Image (cartoon, rainbow, N blue to C red; front, side, top):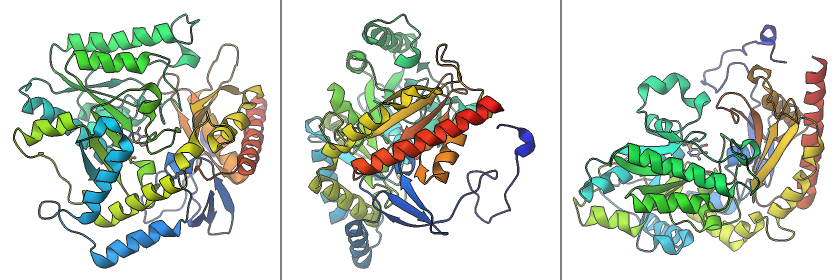
Length: 462
Ligand SMILES: Cc1ncc(COP(=O)(O)O)c(C=O)c1O
C-alpha cells in the first residue's frame, strides 16, 4: 500500500479524467439505489455518488418532465426572457425553504460552485447597495469546502484542494471550527462551551477586519472536508447572532446538506438558524441534470431592487429551462414520497434511523475511530491507533483503499483525506438515496465492514 513502485498510469483517453492512476469502469445504467457498469457488475450507490442522488436512480417522471420541456422550449437567454418553469419552480423552492425566505428570490445556476460564486457576489452587491462599500471580505472556516472555482476556493479551507492554487486566490480569514472527535479544548459538556470559543473566533476575525467583512459562509454539517461533522449545541446560533450584530451576511452552504439530505428540508432547520442567503445544489436535481440554486432572503433582494435595480452577474446557462424542469420534477417527487422524512434519523424505522443503527457497530473495528453524522449524511473516520487517534500516513491512502475494496464487493462509498489537518486523516462519506431499504443498508454495511477489515489486515502485514 502507498508504495510508489506500484503506481502506474492507465492507457491514454480522449477524456481528461480525474486521475491517470485509477481505473474508471464505464457506467451504463441506474435504477433505485443501484448502478451498473458495462460488464454488468452491479453497485449499491451507498454515497449517492458524492452525496448527489437523493431520490434514487432511473426515475422516469424526471426524464419525462425534462423531455417535455425540451420538446416545447429548450432555451432562452435570461437577459431577454423569463420562463413559466423558472417562475413556478422558484416559487415552489422558496416555499420549500420556509418562512425565512418569504418574499425572497431564487437564482438558478448549473451547479454548486457557480451557486457559491453567485452568493459571494450577491453578498458583496448587497453591502454596496446599502452604502457599505468597504465590506468586501468573505470569512469562512478552516476545514471547509465550498467549490472548485477560484472564488469558491478562496473561501474554502480544504488544504488539499486549494494548495497549488493559493497564489491565485484572495486570502481572507479562515476561522477554526468545532470538530468534537478531535476537540482542541478540554471538553466535558458535549463541546457546548468550546463551540462558544469557536464562535468568539469569528467575532474576533470580524473585528480585526475593521468593518470590511461582507459575509460569513459555512456548511451547517461539514461535507467532504471533515466528513459529516455536526455542530455542537449553541454554536451555529451564536455564529448567526454575531453576524447579525456586526452587519455581516450569513451564507449557509447547503450544496451537500440541502434538499432533505439531513432529514430536514435544509440542515439549518435542525439548529433554528435563519441565513440571509442559502446555497444548494447536488440533491436539488439528484444528479438528473446540472443544477444549483441561490435562495436569497427578502432583505437581500429588496436592497438591490430598491437600489441599483439590477444584479451585476450572469451566466449564459443560468435558469436553463430543461434543467429547471428536471429540478422541479425532483422536488415534486421527493415531496410526494416523503423522502425528507425518510432521511430523518430521529424517526423510527426511517432510512436515516436504519442507517444510524447499522453503522453503530462499526466502531468495534480496530481502525474505525469515529462514526458520525445526521440523517442520510454519515462519516466514518479511520485511525492507525485508536487510543491516541493517530491517523494513517496520507501516502497510505487508507480511505481510498477501503473504497476500492468496498466497490469490489459492490458497494460505493466516497473516500476523502485531510480531516485532521487538511492533509492527513482518512474518512469516508456515506450518503445513500433516501429510497434505500433496511435490508440494503444492512447488506451494504456488512460489505463495508469486510472491506475495512481487509484493508486493515493488509496494513498490519505491510
Ligand atoms: C459544501 C459544498 N459546497 C460547494 C460544492 C461545489 O459544488 P459543485 O461540485 O457542484 O460545483 C460542494 C461539492 O462537493 C460542496 O460539498
